Length: 318
Image 1: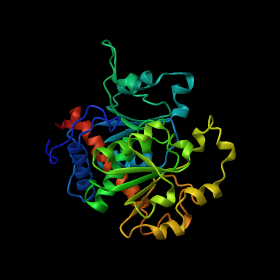
Image 2: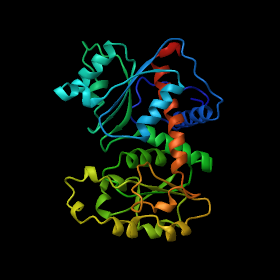
Image 3: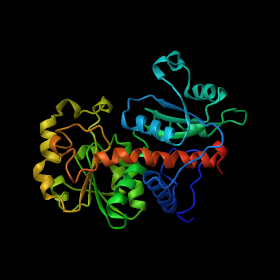
């Protein structure tokens, strides 16, 4: 397909299966939204519900803003005051929302591939609702991946041959998994670093592990990952974790920042553990794309949602 054509999907749950042309079409559309060159006119009302079963600031607020900018109507959903607390299944929750008129569900869930039961429906199912994955456990984070790709493309104008280091809590990171797959597909060279015990066999297929200090002055993109203590219940290394020691061994401090190439950028999906992955005074430094990533999140998610609206012919779109 030409990158000028619209992407049409019935659901958007993973970056797996997207072609390079489709990725570039989504980035192009997100840029058009950002620059005010694209507008969406919905002929009929489209209702969205944002179901966040894990805490979120950036992802949730930017999906809400994206829906508002696209002219959609939002139905407020709070897991803490819903029948989920009574044991209602995710399927039955969506069946209820669909029955009252919700067309699209944006879902963040702690279970990996929670969406499989929502996409592989039995013949007698009445569920007819678009699903957009806002993050599943340690599986996929397609919207973060797309906004990261958009940010990289804005800065470099290409992906082929770029050297990207993904550093930190690899095992628990859906950001690492989504980005390593798509960056490799687009022609970038991926490297990994951080505590060696978080570098497992699944990452070896996408790139090699190197110490942080062997990478920083060679990379175009340094992508830092948050240490996700909430997912470390079964990690024997958690008891020995020391924030200052982690920062000294694996974090970007002023000395490592000064070694970065002139055109290199630092990225972080947030929230940042200041003084752990990144020195606090560098969060808004010139080479840090953290603020730009958050801005781009709105427009990348607009492009994602539009793809599902068109794939389902919602709001009079084709």
